[in-house]
Image (cartoon, rainbow, N blue to C red; front, side, top):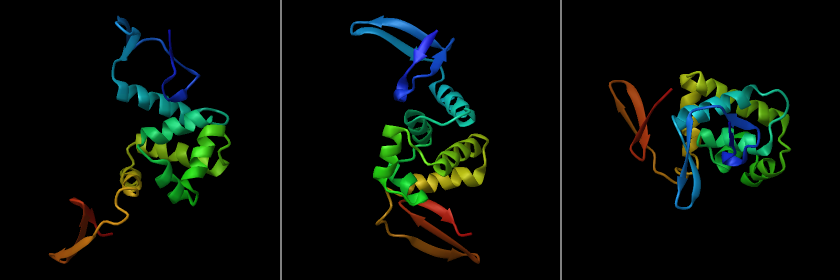
Length: 152
């Protein structure tokens, strides 16, 4: 079995799906279907009984490509607060519940949640971007940075 420690995880072991090999720099390992591996780990962490460690919380957050800043802003906390949770593992219960639920909804293909995560991922990049709104056929459409958003 291989002890998988990427992202600071300490409690994940792989029974297969990896290949160990020697390189000129020492031993190496490659993973088959790394995206599927990440999803399986995040799903297990989302269902894990008990509290998440800071590394586990960070692993789930990172798998959704959420920055500390955008997650913090969304929940009314600072980027530094999120970094502190990930470092010391003292994550507020509501925040832990939110990240688990958000991941599971995304993993289950909830289109609204997937769209919300996409917007959260843009928070850091579009703060000062011009928004262009136009009307066509009695429907308003907005866009920024070549990404279209339908008006609700």
